Length: 273
Image (cartoon, rainbow, N blue to C red; front, top):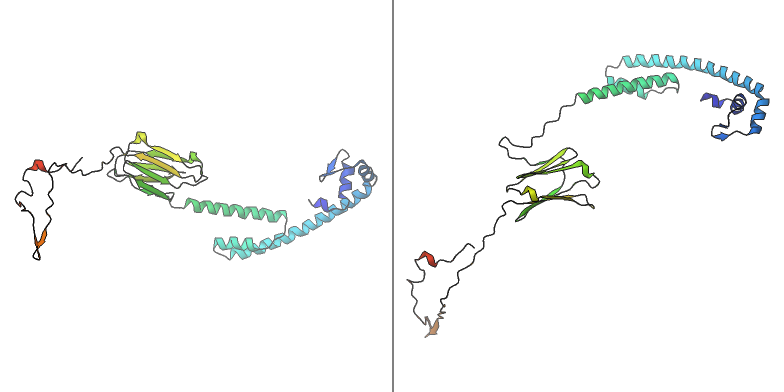
């Protein structure tokens, strides 16, 4: 406020407004009011003179600002590029006055309108396709989160690196028979599986320390391990060790070559448990 720069401004206000108790965050004392009231006529003359001087300065300032504005507009008219014209305006020094503030608001508005036009001209984002034409779900990672998928014997375990400080209300988990989908603030993470999932027993947990998401999905038809178990035989195995005689190896007993393998299928050991 230019009035604050006038001499005896405080005394003049206290004398003019006797009901005032505080001025400029300072308490007004009764002695100050009495002293200001005594010299009110002197203070009034000083304030009126300063106000007249201020009006003269403002008139001169208006003329200077108008001349600079006209000169700036002539220079900007010679520039064809709109961005260069705006840069010319913002790089030009100006006085601190109401006229300058009005011009600043005007060019601020032009800049906002230009930015809004650019935003409207932005290309439309492509639509995310979640499934192939045949119905097979795609694998997607729009939020670009780290993940770890474990294919266990009886279940799938998915660990998704969700942001630590993300609110849980921003997460949506959908477990289907052959895929799992996690929506993180509207961005889709989707993973398909080769085996069918038991969706009724699937569970979702989130770590309170790291914020990671753990999705456990049991398999509907767990793979069975094939084990080999030989059939017990009551026949005793004769270990025919060769003996050395006259520098030659000789068998202790004769070997029946024809009956080494039986032709009957019933004698084969059971391989599948």
